[in-house]
Length: 542
Image 1 (cartoon, rainbow, N blue to C red):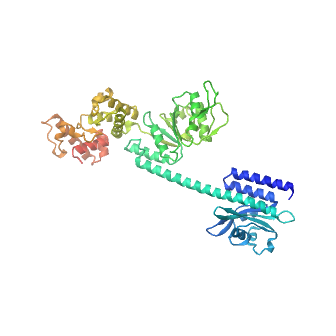
Image 2 (cartoon, helix red, strand yellow; image 1 turned 30 degrees about the vertical axis):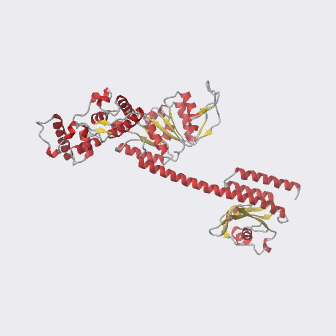
C-alpha cells in the first residue's frame, strides 16, 4: 500500500467516525458508509446484510452497486442464513477474503442469478454486537486487475465494528422511540378518559349547553387542531382553554395565557415574540417571548379579536411557519406550540368589515367552541354558587352554612350580564359580609339582586350547600305541605300554607297538561328543571 493510499484510508476512517458520531438514523448513516467503502476500496458494489432471526434469513437492507438496477433487486432478496460465503462468515464470526468465487464451493449463485450481478471476488466481515453476530458487510468486485488484498480486508474489518455498534444503537434508539410513542399514546388515552370522567373538573355545568361544550373540549383535547373559544366576557374562556390543555398530550408542557387587548402593539410584539437587548428604548437585556416560553405546551391568545392589524400578520407567520422573530433580530427561531385563541367578538363580522384578517381567521377558527352565557344555563347557577361559597369560605377562613332558598332564587333569576365572573364576585361579597357559621340569605346580597326579590310562589327555607340545614330549619317545615291530591281550600289557614297549596296544585295541573314532561313544564312555569324537581319532591308530586 502506498503512502497516499494509507493517507486516504485514514481520512476515510476519520470521516466515517465523524458520521457515526453525528447520525443516529440508519437510513442516513449506512448508505453513506456504503458509498465511502466503494470509493476507498475501489469496488463495484458494497452491501450490509442483516440476520432475520425469526426466519433465519439474510437480507439486504442497504446496498450500493454501480448498477442501480442491481441495487434495487438486492433490496428485495432474502436467502437462508446458512448458505453461501455470507452464511459461513455469519456463523464463523471471522472475516474472509475470496479471490475467485467460482473456485469456492461455499459460493451461493442464487443471489447473482436473481439480481443480475456477476460476482468475481469479495471480502466479508461479520457485524458483531454485544449479543452476537447480527449480520455482515461485504464488498464485491475489485476494479483493479488484482483482487482485494489483506489491507482491504483489515479496513473492512475496522469499519464493520463501527457499523455494528451504530446498527445496535440505532435499534435501541428505535425501540426507545417506539416505547415513548406507545407511552405517549397511552397517557393521551388516559388523559382523555380522565377528562371524560371528571368532565373538566374546574368547569361547572350539567345542562345540555354545557354537555355539548364538554363534548367539543374532549374532541379538541385529542387533536392538535386550532381551537377558537367564543363567548362573552366572564364565561370562563381561559378555564376552558386550560381544560383542553390539561387533557391533551401537551399537558406536561407549559400553559401560557396572554390578553391581546391589555397591551399596546409594540409591547404585545415583544411579549409574544421576545426582543434583543437594545432593540428599543428600555430593552436593557434579551427577553424571551411567551411563544418560546410555551415551547412544548399551549399558548392562549385571549381577546385575539383586539389584536392590531400589523400583529395579525406576524401571528399568521407564526402559525404558518412555526417560528418567531424576536424584535431586533432577523433570524427566526423554531417553536413547537399549540395555539388556542379566544374572543368575545363575532370574528366573522370583524372579517366582513376588514378589521380582522380573513387568512388569520380561517387559521384559528378550524374548531370553534362557543361558551354559553350564564343566563342561557340558569340550571347551573346553584352548582356554581355552591362552588363559589366553598372557595370564598376557604379564602376568608370562615364556615358558611350554604345559601338559603330565597337568596338562591334571587341568584337564579338574575340576568348576570357579567356571567360567571359577576356571580363569583357576588358570592365573594356575600361571604365577606356574613358572620362565621351563617347561612347566606337575601340580606347578604347586593342591592341590585335584592331589588328583584325572590319568587313568592315557592316554599321557603331550603338551604343550598348544607343538607343538614334544609326545610327542617324553617318553622313551617314542621308541617310539610300536603300532596296535591289533598290540597285544602284556599280559604282559612296560614298565608304560607295557602300559598304552598296553590303552588302545588298549579304545578300538578301544568305537569298533567304536558303529560308529565318535566323539561317542558319547567319552561312553562319559568323555572329551571332543577328547581322544578325540588318543588315536585317537596310536594310529593313524583
